[in-house]
Image (cartoon, rainbow, N blue to C red; front, top):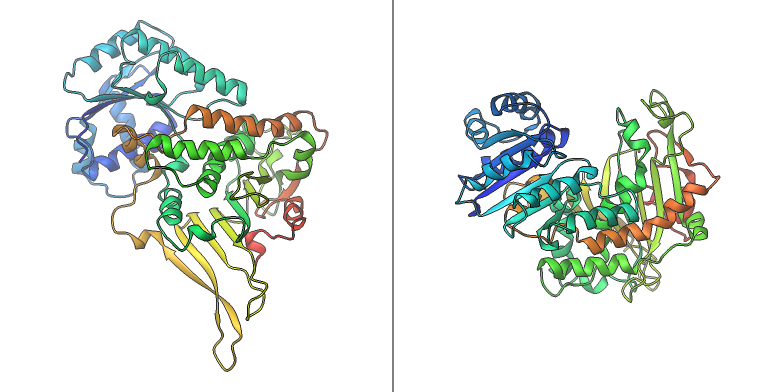
Length: 478
């Protein structure tokens, strides 16, 4: 059980994220006995509800998302933690009541403000919170993405929040950092003496980082069309995966030591000119295939949209460890399979007694949480011919204990004041700085996105991107 007695104020409490992720995650922590018995949840939104009406909505809209460890008794005890306040973020006088409710509990250790709202509300919310003293040192503020649509808007959002909250109070959330399998990259690398010595350019031929989704945009066409795959996935989720793979050993596991090393990776990414973008970035858009619609046929997507649903990037991390090693980043919707994984392709041993064979390490984040290694072993029978074999570590079975979903784990990190799994401002803005040449190029390029059939692995141009270096995507490898 956490020893931290907290108030968690969720702005946008009636919204989709709150109902699908935040409240179910807090329930799971409650059911596991990990929350202080007196900790309280305050739902806040513009909806004119009282607490009973809000709880009725929670009953119908949130409880259905709890798939594990549910019991009526635990649910009944959980909802006793919840109160609701109707509040308009743009009305300063509404914050006086919130301040009174929060400050009435003298025994609270800290106050967590979760801004599950559109970023345009961050500035007025922070200003009005500060006006009633809800930015004191014991207050932590959680910012839900997207934190901007480009470098300038990200800098503006960060500057607005920084007027009222110190950097050490700000928790910028990226739910991929809450995945146990991504966090496991650090102990896998730095906790095993046989892996770290070969985790560099002398042994690694290439690195592939993929987040593939089988679903299309569904009913989110209007939102997605102004966002696209680069903003939605590359600048945040893929960048975090890249940092964990490429970073140097931090001085400690302290938040700033870890985040310092991540920042160094992003800063070391080779910047791209417009010509580099043309050469090293593939923009794709899924087309109709069988019964599956193409992107342009999706709900509320303009018929002439050039928004990308797929991106593949050849990047390089210009550090002594990785100099010259291509990093291939890709993400896409309507792909052939759902997958999030990191692949290290090792160089073949040209002088081997058994032929030129290459090992491969795959760290899978979804749908399974596994680490697999491609070996070469003797074939059965006479002689010493070899054949590939795979050794798989199932992380779900390797370590005892309940595996928390990403949002639950991150909320518990906020409660206990651990910042290592949250983005620091300098890293976030440096990531935006790196992707800006891609966005700028696409804004003026006459070249439309490459079409790729729904339920495929993306455009042919993405295969050629790797073929140029003599490489293959993992699904094409033997």
